[in-house]
Image (cartoon, rainbow, N blue to C red):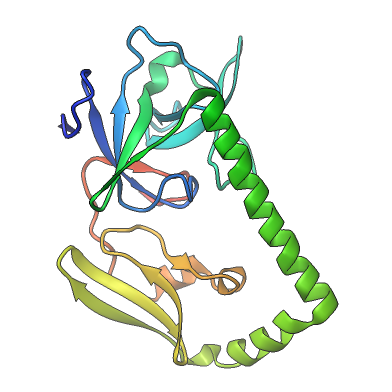
Length: 224
């Protein structure tokens, strides 16, 4: 595990995040700066990295409740609460910053983190509602999708060599509908095509996988 990339005055664990369960708070290949809970209280709203009690897999999700039974978490982009009930000794620490390219992004915790989480969910479901209204009332999407999906037989993947590794781009005819960045374990399929394209199908029909790193923190929908 790489340590000490950011000077916060305390020991820092650096983990590479892959997956979509914390999008947009955390994004594929973010470098998480995780500090242990030393002389600090664990709070609802904190984004934490932890070992799952069942498999010992590293995951980064947000704390949504703390009770006598334990700590419950959920990914910001997930509809359901995680199945795990965590104990303090399961926690690696709190995610306080992420390195995203050349930027250092602060990850809020506590009350501010909880409000940020609620705001992201509001935006997500507001967009879904707008899409549904357009679909049901105007019939715009059905017409557009019918035209695009008719060319699904022409769906193909192009590979581009980047300095960081191989990038895959998914096309439907001449339209770019998704990407898989170097080292990423999951595709990012653009809306509305994510409603119809099966990522597992893409993985089964493409032998080239992204390169994986030893210090990786997964969203729960990533494959280890």
